[in-house]
Length: 409
Image (cartoon, rainbow, N blue to C red; front, side, top):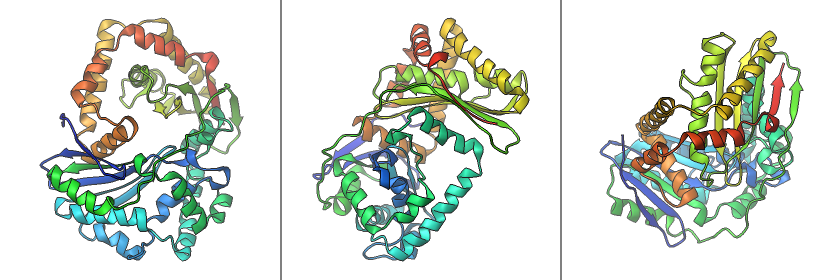
């Protein structure tokens, strides 16, 4: 478990660097950009994700094969992902290849050419990704639920986009989106590996320092005006799938940490979560049951998902609502709260053993907050949560009158 302060530096063009020194022969390096699908205009739906796919398809000095082989040819891995608010390019590699990785990430981020032939081929890949998603109701329902909750707002749209929009994308649209959304003051280079920080800074200065400074001037369209909705869609599925949820706290809200604890108690990954015990262990009503909480820059989303036999749907919904009401009306006891805190602290500690995850986590924290709390500080904040705070958060978020519901049956 890593628990130390992190080393940081800012390049003259505004790109920030954060580094965690390790003694591992494997290094992790990523570039996180504060731009995602919610930053798209109406005619750009799916473009942020499509750029993430197409960025590997050739640069001014490399063809697609050479981009992919540069790191993977020496046993490393090159990857990327897109969320509603971030685009991330990252790699895992032997530390001997730190500079090779830094140079490649800079090249694909700032010098990709997006050849028409390559992007037309990649459109077919993304179409298949969309088809695969639409074949998975347990995944698709989350996107349709966000469309229900954030009705009409850019954050409502799914990340993959649509086949119709996809086929209209071209190089001009790609370069326009990058020019409008990739700003140097909204980029963080995150590193976890066995390299001295001065050497890392010198290396990143060489490959990223010459990039022209470009600071963000505009702000995102804020979400407001949530109205609870209920929707049922008839599908040819063996199970009924259900998502129940509502808006929650943004990532700067002081109630966010108590919300993370509450969510973990209710339906976190552990088998002893309240929903797992109520629906699966005691009654055998569900195989998958979980809750999740996602914090965005101006809002948040809390939801519960389960799949169950169609005959058990109403009973399962009633059990979920019962657990909501228990947390709203019955304060957690001292022993119960202590166990919940220890569980969350343990889960966070275990997650830091994945150094790739650690690199992405500290990068995102630095991108959003311009700082990273060491684990000891995070744990102290969790330990400070009171039963009254948990109950207060439960009464704000777990109000059945504020819940939206989406059912596939």
